Length: 426
Image (cartoon, rainbow, N blue to C red):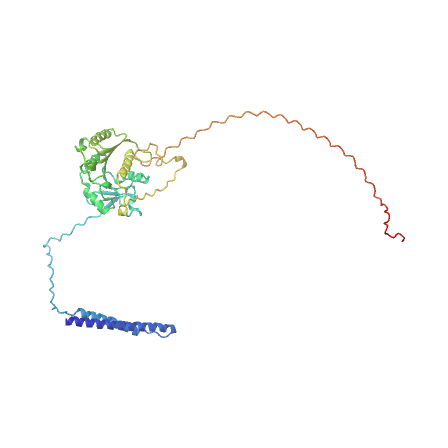
């Protein structure tokens, strides 16, 4: 109890001394500043000394009050030493945790960026991914099984970019597994960790081209909870690349959305796609079939036209690119550099294609205007009959000549008789 009282007294004395010294320092400071008005010499040394004394008094009082035992016996603290780590055995270096290697850029096809991961999977980023307005925009993800070819010769990337530049599709992040047997789940997780992609099944699709089309269909039918849609481009789905269609009823949430497409010259692929379409519709799958696809003038081969239509189909099936907070935000368009053409070059085939627009195009070209009907030449008018001449006007009769007036007689003065009152004598 005595320690508590002593500590309270020391703290009160320290606080009181601090208040007095601080007040004295403030008064001294004000007096010195008031002397500056009259151009007197200024000396703040006394105010600084009083301020320092107030700080020391308060610090000492608090330190003395906190260090009192307050009736409890102090006990020495025991410091426990940390157990040393066991040293590695001689001759064997210490194992270091493995760090995932960063993706390595291998090419820049169609203005995008193609990077390769450590397991051989490649990821293609569209040109809009690096735009200044897309730093907070996430993109849908497409798993594409493509034939082995040089990145510059692959037709998937320019087809996607061209259709996006025309405003008919959204940009996608494309994941290309190293082969058909590789499970793309790890690659999709790695891409989702490193890049801005929309999470969830509604923004995922699988695509196969040529002999790799059955790989995409098998992955979609085996795991309908992973992909929103599946696309087969010019594939054969029987024989060595057979696609097993599940039997029995399929729940509504597990029905895959499938697109099958073939070119006009691919009759064998068309027959295989028709057989697969019949089998898929028996289980309630939503299937669309595009056949007889022709090359578009100025846009490349029929394969590139097919891939462009595929990007439009995936845009319809996918959720749009999303910004922060889950809000839908359209991806920024690619800047198109205008090309000067001579007058003899005719119309641009990109803006007005010669072939009919496909039903997948969301913005078909406007129909041509009907020709203006030509008016027949007007018939010449018959000459008008000459008008008869007007009869001459009759001459006015001459006015009669008035006789001259008689002259007036001259004025003569008349003598007036005198008045009776007038004096006539003289």
